[in-house]
Length: 95
Image (cartoon, rainbow, N blue to C red):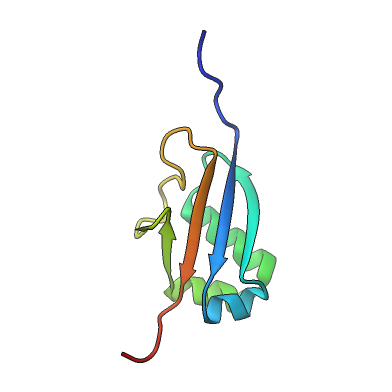
């Protein structure tokens, strides 16, 4: 008997600072295909919340399960995980 393959991925998003302002929410949950990439997520968010969030995403750090994701073309979830947390951290001013 083989293990069932997950076909969707639940993404728990948290927005901070300017990203939260542009999105109009501090957090939200989305369902994506299991093979979705960080680039797919960014594209969806820009469509969902508008060009200002798209601009902010272009200069923000994405933390996927507490790890900075620099490569946007790889899958969001490692292996067959059905849920990930993504934090959108725009650049912060100050020291």
